[in-house]
Image (cartoon, rainbow, N blue to C red; front, side, top):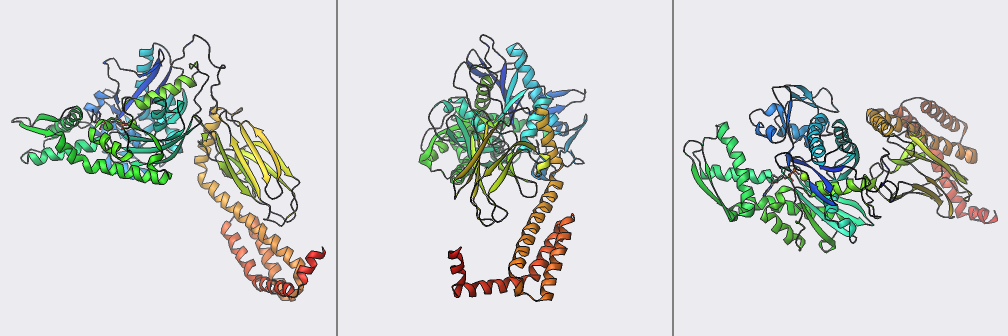
Amino acid sequence: MALLQISEPGMSTVPHQHRLAVGIDLGTTNSLVASVRSGIAEALPDVNGDLLLPSVVRYNEMNSVDVGKTALAHASSDPLNTIASVKRLLGRSVEEMDWVANHLPYEFDQSDPVMPAVITRQGNKNPIEISAEILKVLKDRAEQTLGGELQGAVVTVPAYFDEAQRQATRDAARIAGLEVMRLINEPTAAAVAYGLDQTEEGVIVVYDLGGGTFDVSVLRLQKGVFEVIATGGDTALGGDDFDAVILEWVLQQLPGLDVSSHKLMRALSMQVREVKETLTTEPECNFEVGIDSPSKLTLTRTVFDELIHPLVKKTIRTCRKVLRDAEIELDQVMDTVMVGGATRVPLVQAEVSEFFGREPKTDIDPDQVVAIGAALQANVLVGNSQDDQVLLLDVTPLSLGLETMGGLVEVIIPRNTTLPVARAQEFTTFKDGQTAMSIHVLQGERDLVSECRSLAHFELRGFPPMVAGAAKIRVSFQVDADGLLNVEAEEVSSNTRASVVVKPSYGLTDEQVEAMLRASVEHADTDMRQRQLLEHRVEADRVIEAITAALKADQELLNESETADIVAAVADLEQAKAGEDGDDITNAIEAVEQAAATFVARRMNASVREVMAGKTVAEFTEE
Ligand code: ADP
Ligand code: MG
């Protein structure tokens, strides 16, 4: 499957043949799968009728794997083999996992710094494998309910997920046997579920309060494409913190409670969650705490609201900050969409309404809204949609860039940028009098031209000769919604133009994309050193060229030994340039600059004197 492919109206749709496609929300706390059936997107239940699958995986004593409720039931009795919140580990290296490692009870094998694994009784399990177990269960569930093999899936990821985390999600899905047609951002999926992509253009805020995380995203919708303009949140704030607040309150009410009893505490942690969820619909909740001689307690919503008020206020402060980052005023926000189970809490809805000055969208179940949006997108991508209007939400699978001096790639459009996109950058000439420039368009994640895929070569010719660095060559890259790349180069002062159209997805298989990504990770370090070395060499060339030209023009300003010093320093620089050490080159450049310092000063004085004498000006006008 080509990553840039977009289903085109009238092409992929075979009439009367409905293809099975699903949307999957792989959540930190809960995961679920949805699909479009008889024109309606809905979450698919398991055999017990449950829609939510707790994102918990247990490697049990029988050498098999439990996922969901059964696994969750063992979370506190078998913590080392029962992995919850694996999403927090996905695509994370040892260094990046500090926070998580301090908050989760698992033991990690950190011998692989790129992908640390959890040590379980069934051996080491990395986060990709663990996530794949959850996805497998959802795949089976979907195939059973839908009665056939799945053709494709759209999996959602948080908007802030980086390359590694997205790739890890993709890999997990592949291990689970899913054909991932696309990864889409969770807030985008939520907006799609509400059909916001079909309506006007504008700014949408998605407020997502899950079990353990809070995310707020500002999206801009334009011509059916959502652009994430800012994200923010708190990776340690969610509905589970409301549970913790209730637990604290209970312990305050009942100081005699035996907190050392694991059994009691386990029961209590389940109980407080139920209390919280009851208070969503009821004004108060009566419950009994304790095993042998239970005590009766009543928590009212009023008290609960007071308890959680500081936490909710914190999320509102984050909203304010993210809007500021996005440079969006409150009155520019067209809609607010609520996502995540914890947004059911009435105080959360009240505070969000008050802050944004309008009722947020809550009609679609906040647990399901992300999966539903993903299902709608999957339905279009697999070719079931009869509409001519196809959602255009796509990203560039690999970075697109240009060759610059020294065989380096300058990225113009980074990988995973939403399509369509247009970006431009200015370049200049390297030599005096240059009248043409060769443009080499590349695709890939490596720093070196030789390691990337060449997409096109073209030339911008016929701009007037100028001093090196004076020409302004603006190169713009445009990728349309179909993944077609158009590159245009223009010398700005003379209006000289040239352009070329390339189709980047052409002929690149998934395997190739993967191999390139893998290589970019493996070689990141050497690439960086190579890049620095090449940059130093380019700088060396510039210095040598400048000093040689100056010597040619004004040698009479120097005596013999001064000339010899400069020539020697230049020779040293030539030698350093041929070597492999960037620092040597830097030192040699400094030596040349030092040797030439007096020369440069004299040239400057001389030219000032000439100008004072009116000579230079006269010469200029005569020419
Ligand atoms: P995630 O996106 O992290 O997987 P979810 O969106 O599934 O999480 O949200 C889970 C959280 O929502 C839990 O803290 C759960 O207790 C809370 N939640 C679910 N239903 C309700 C409810 N009716 N009232 C209050 N909180 C709820
Ligand atoms: Mg979620």
